[in-house]
Structure formats: structure tokens, C-alpha cells
Amino acid sequence: MKTRIAFAFALMTAGCAGVDAGPIDDSSDPYTEAGDKADAFRLGKFETFVGQDGRTYFHLLAGNGEKVLASQGYASLRNAQDGIATVRFNGEHTESYQLLQAADGQWYFNLLAGNYQVIGTSELYTTKSNAQRAISTVAGIVTAANQAASQTGARFQVFHGLDGEYYFHLRAANGEIVLQSQGYTRRSSAVSGTASVSANGALASHYQIKDAANGQAYFVLVAGNGQVVGVSETYISRSNAERGAATVQALLAGGATITPAQ
Image (cartoon, rainbow, N blue to C red; front, side):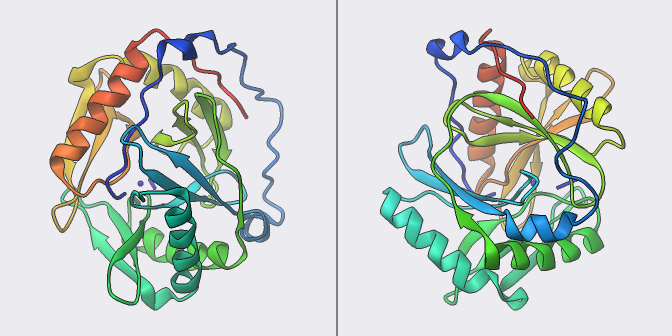
């Protein structure tokens, strides 16, 4: 499973309740196996958004919509754009990536600038080899990625991962991706997983805080049977991860309708 540096989660306000619900289209998948990796590189893009803390963030999406790298917070959009330029410069070189292991055995990586400052953090991966392959993939996406406008609207999105499995992630109203699923062998199973996240994510007791490395932390959302159904970003501290979990829980418990989308 793929999951960042202190991200501020955006809580959906009462106004989000008016978002129209709609069925997830399970009849087709625009991300086919043919040319998957080429499209991931060619159609990759950076998205910016403003967090609840007022700071500007960006994340990097592959061509299939999968989030593969996320930033720290910046004081302004201009600074975030400068951060994107720094990621472009350093991210092309695999030696700029630092591979790390979380306390529970999962793997992730940080992208470092020339001064060794962390400028991007990956998703979490179940194996070291998957994380190592992802570094090469992200380097290719960074090289070709375009920059997109800020996104809006709270919704689930299902996508076909570069590893051949299906995933979904949850976007908050400001466009930030706040939670990602485990992998599924079928798209219909991933679609069903969104219902589990909606049900279990409303309960604070279903969130568990996990230690990463170098003082970083993240949280997982578990179903009633103990199975992990969602994984967060990696945060720079345990307290930030705790706040992130509380915000996502409030988002899902608020009764606002989240639009499921392709």
C-alpha cells in the first residue's frame, strides 16, 4: 500500500452538504494496462490547494490520478510554486530520494533538496521493493508532469494503480487527498471499500496512530474486523497525525454528502 509531511486536513463545512451524490461509474476504467506507465509519466500533474491552516500545499498525481508525492506547507501560492520547481529539479535524480521504513514494517521515501531538506514524501508501501520501484516511477513522472489548477469538491475517486491493483482515495472539499485505501484486485471491490470508509471513518475509535521514521507518524482507519481500510499522509509529528485523524473523522461524521467520482 502506498502513503507525508505535516499536511493540514481541510474539514468540510456545512455548506458541503449540498454536494450532489452520484453513483461511481463501474462500467469502464480510463486507465488501461496498455501504455499505463507512459500515460503515468505524460499525464502526471502537480495540484495545489490551501490547507485548513491557511498554508498552501501541492501534491503530485500520476496519470491515473494516484497521488505519488506530497509537499510540506508554504506561506503562499508563489512559494508553493517555487517548491514545485525544486521538486522538478531534484526529483529527476533517484539519488535525491531517501528510503525509510515505518515502525510497522511499511516503507516510504522522502525527496530531498540539495541542502537535505525534505521537499516531498511518498505514500506508504507494503514492501521495500515496491517503494524502490516507486522511486524510479516518481522520478519519471516528475520529469514530465504538468501543473494544474487548484481542485475543489469532496469526493471519493477510484483509480487503477501502477502495480495493477485498484485503489480509492478521499478528497476533502479543498481538493486535498486526505485518505487512501489498500489495494484491491477488482475495481468493484474498491468501490465497495468506499462504503466501509464512510461507515467506519465516522468513529474516532477506528483510527490508530502509527510511528514512521525520524519522528514522523501517520494514522490508519480500521474496520470492525481490524482490517485496515484507509491510510493517511505521513506527518512530521505524532501530534499532527492525531489532529489529522480527528479532522478526517469529523469530516466523515458530519453527515455531509461526499460525491463519489471516477
